[in-house]
Amino acid sequence: MNIGPRHIRERYPAQVEVVRRALATAFAKQLPESEDFERDAVLFRTPNGCLVTVSEEFFSDVPATAISARLAEWRVAEKAKALGQSDRLVVTTDGTFVEQRG
Image (cartoon, rainbow, N blue to C red; front, side, top):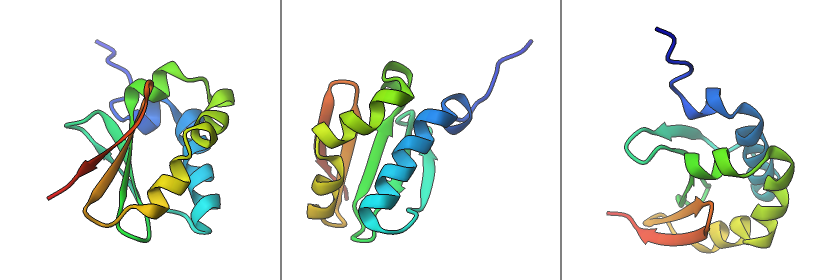
């Protein structure tokens, strides 16, 4: 039985790399990242402590070639820079929203 890659970063490497580079450019450093198996998402932790949570749905629905434009259109980096350490910016196929953590 071949189930395929378990991790989102293994299933969508090109898409994740585009997000990784966009956030690294915006924050002038590589951001720590991990997978959130409960949310089916990849998490990026910003220097100000905000979590940027990018859903698997986004990675599966948006081609790698369109991700940079979508992130810019939705102002993901600017929003993440403005949020604090108790905030989570969630990116889905439909856009972004903010959740309070804690």
